Amino acid sequence: MNVNTKNLVSITEANQNFSRVARMVDENGAVVILKNNTPRYLLIEFGKAERELEAADEDVMAVSKRLIAKNKKAYEVLAE
Image (cartoon, rainbow, N blue to C red; front, side, top):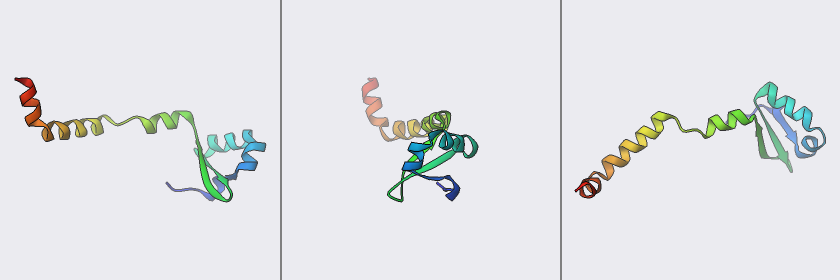
């Protein structure tokens, strides 16, 4: 993940001025919150988080095909 240095915010600033940090997320898509000068938290829009968690249909199909091929003999025995 590429991080824009303009989107880095200290945890103190995030705590004291959360509305400003939320506006930064709206404008730039994400904000990295630093704790002790190291990246600790990532603040993103909820909708973006949901999209990131959803598996693409192609990915699910590829895994399914691989598992079916790998376990073909077991499936044949179970089918009897």
